[in-house]
Length: 56
Ligand code: SF4
Ligand code: SF4
Image 1 (cartoon, helix red, strand yellow):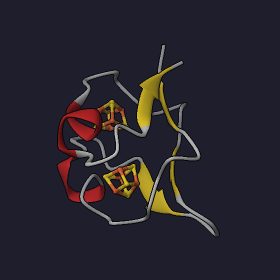
Image 2 (cartoon, protein in one colour):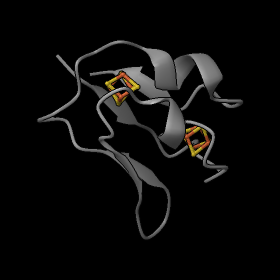
Image 3 (cartoon, helix red, strand yellow):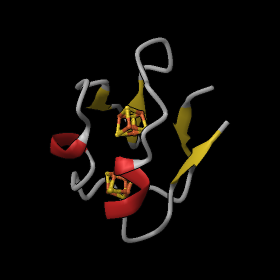
Image 4 (tube, protein in one colour):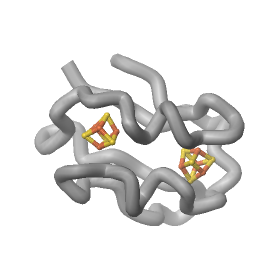
């Protein structure tokens, strides 16, 4: 299981430095998670102001 970032993302960047395995990056329209490396910790969801990262 991994988290994914939904369309609700406003590209604030708050989640990127919180990821312990650095799999969050800025994409073209919003931030994205490389699901292959996500360890499902939920840290990104905890800091997101719009609740965009969700467990897949
Ligand atoms: Fe990174 Fe954890 Fe979010 Fe996965 S759930 S992208 S490991 S902060
Ligand atoms: Fe997008 Fe939420 Fe990450 Fe901000 S914290 S970049 S709104 S997913």
